[in-house]
Structure formats: structure tokens, C-alpha cells
Image (cartoon, rainbow, N blue to C red; front, side, top):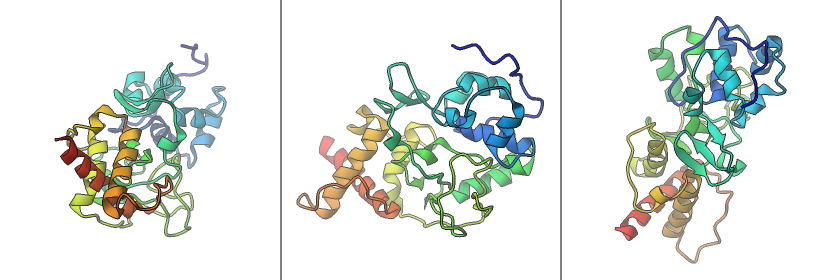
Amino acid sequence: MKALPPNLRPIPLRVRPAPFEPAYGLLGRLAVRHGYSASRAFVADMAFGITDFVHELECGRRLAELACLAGLAEATIAASTMVTDQAGTLWIGAEQVDVAANHRAVSAAGRVCPCCLRIDLETRAGPESCRPHRRIWWDLTGVVSCPAHGVLLLDVCPNCGNSPSRVPTSPRHCRCGHDLAGLATLPLDDADLMADRYLVGRLGGVRASAHPLFDRMSLHNAALAMLRIGRAGLLGARSLPFRKDITEPALWAKMASIGFREAASNES
């Protein structure tokens, strides 16, 4: 491991790590704790000489430096951050995301579950501004809903029409300043939550369920396989060729959940 910058020291004002919070989410809450509205401004003023530290954390690097800054064990941060190992395999803790570092496995939009944000505000301790936190599965392409609350993830801010960022200081607010915690998103039928419940369950976010086929796949490949099988089940084998750009979240959730059930029945 590279030596830490000599002027990097634990900071006095810290935040408690939240369950399933990725490294860039933790950095954002540290910035909020110190009165900053942007992680990059916080890092720049810390002046410990790491080029584009925020982007490095997004890519699963520089966790040792963040651990030193936050006064935490590096393993604690790595357990809920997408990290690429020396062989090029992408992991979240002990769960394989993909056999190779793959940007298609990571959502470009900083999606959130407003219900989770409200729960954070109501139940977490500490300054209110530091309570809302990201969940790592919000940033997985194959997950489009929050299975804990049965709603689609919010991927567009109704105030500005843009996708929220993955690296704001707080996931509660869009870049335009709009409060996302007060919003409602589309509820899904329980049957359409099965695919995301399975994927998030593998990460420990909800109760896990086994699957005879998808347990043998990485998270990203399992998500794609469910979608392909579900598309054929919903539209028929002679439907239009599978498109990687199925972007309607409710349809994605329905197709993937159909695929989850169809594959299980065929394997049993």
C-alpha cells in the first residue's frame, strides 16, 4: 500500500459510519459535518495533496486515506463500497458485482429512496444535516427500487428535471437544492419487487433469499439475466431483440421479477 500523505490526520469532527454507506457518501457527510456544501471544496481546504480525491473514492480507491481521515478501519468502509481487486474483479464486501470492473454495473444517476431518507432523519442520532446517507445498492444499475419500502428509486428531481448526483454532500438534496426527502415515488406491487429484493438481499440490505441459478452469478450478470428471461416471458421469445437500454424503471422491475420467478421454476 502507498504511504499516506504526511499531513493527513484524523479530523476532530466526525460522523458515525452508516450501514451500507459507500466511501463517497461518508466523505459527503464529513463535509456536511464541517459546514461544507460540496465535498470537493472540503477536500480542497483540507489540502492533503490527493488529486481528485472524490473521484478516487467513487472508483473504490484511496479508502485507506478516507479511513485515516474519518478515524475508521479501512475494512469498515470497503465492506460497503464498490472496489476493484488486483485481478480486476468488482466487489462490494464479499459479494461479487462483476467479473471485471464494469461501468455499466454502476448507475450514472444518483438515485435515492425518499422513504429511506425520512427514516434516517427520524431515527439516526447526531446533527440532522448529517443523518441522511446513501445506500450502496442505490448505485447499482440492476436495482431500480427500494425493496424495504416497496417504491421505485427517485432518479429525476421534479424541481430541475435533472438526475441527482451520486456525490453530493448529502443525498437529501438535489444539486438545485430541492429537498428529496419530502417526495413520493411510485409504489410497486410486491410481485414486482422480487428481483431487487433478491439483489439487495445478497448485500444484506433486506432478508436474503436463495436462487438455484442466480446464486452462481455475479450481481450484475444476475440482474441482466433476470431482465432477459423476464422480457421473453412477458413479450414472448419472438419479441424484438433484447435491448440494453430498457430505461422505464417500473417495466424493468416487472420484467426482472418475472425472470426471477421463471428461472427458479425451470431450475427446480
